[in-house]
Image (cartoon, rainbow, N blue to C red):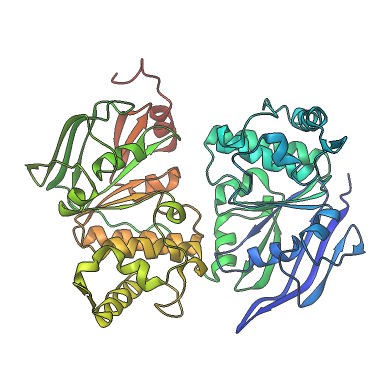
Length: 501
């Protein structure tokens, strides 16, 4: 079956003050295809999509939709032309119902008031198209992230969209939820919808995409058929070189225990958590979403109370009631969501890098600005953070550079035990390689790292050992020579009746 060309973006240029963000970028999307848009953070993907979605206007170039030239001046123009964008950070209104979110601003009216029966009936019909068992009257805040994602897709298609943009749609989904999302995407393909799919997860591209367009530094690099390429070729196109040492690890002798956790429990979900951590080790924590990995780390860092069990640090019993206690013992925690839990997005790099070591440059009411600048510069250099200056607003940095700011902030506290919760989530392959190299350098220097990751290749290639969790308890420990994806997934899906066997 021949595929109709739905979208052509030709020779698109976009300038911002002092920056050429896009330079002669082209993109073609056909009906019934998933077209992946790939590139490092800062490559220009978001700018291109914002032009298509009517958020930015183009400076030069042309856009054709189903063969006719399109003039997109705003979001409304884009929607009328059959384009819908589902952003990585969902834009639903939590306190409103599913139906109210889907038809926000387009509610059916009867006798001057919203016709709630028609509103809910229309919503129910849309949801049933995808076999979604979601109540139109349910508040969005009561839905899972995956269900919210489905509501966003339903809302987008309620505009009769032929072109759908999905930006990092799986970043917060479990494997089972990803499978369901992919089934929806395949159904949309059958209906002739053209999908632009943005993701940093290389493994997804082979599963779901038909073609891949690669961008680098605001320019078009090339388009390839997914079935005729591999990850090495795509990475080389993205970064302009072969990443021969994508995962960087040198392994230390594990002789000196720095942390012992015995029978830890929180009185609610966690039960009998026991493990050791050695000097110079990367200890991986694997498991499905909801297994309890982050909850363990919150207990260790004093964010959640510990009800049972013992913790020993460097051979001594340790009492951790709050983060200050944890920091005094040499702990540092880089949380899962940098934007929600770590960064001050409207503040500059200097502020974000130095905020945890205020005592080093503040005495009473006096601020030693030179010392603060020195600390920021030191960790910008150590972390290879790409920023024009320490005064750059951190919200304007790429995801990878934001992550390196957070890690640098905690390294400034000179920790002995660094906890990294999903250290490369939402980070492009080039920045991932840099973060892996930083982690390797840290353990070579004797730092100990606990790494939570949902990416099994990352766990296997970066960990000395891996602890696997399911249902709030540890189901197994695998040494480096025992690790593979099948064994990890077997332990991650064990039921309580099987645990401990």
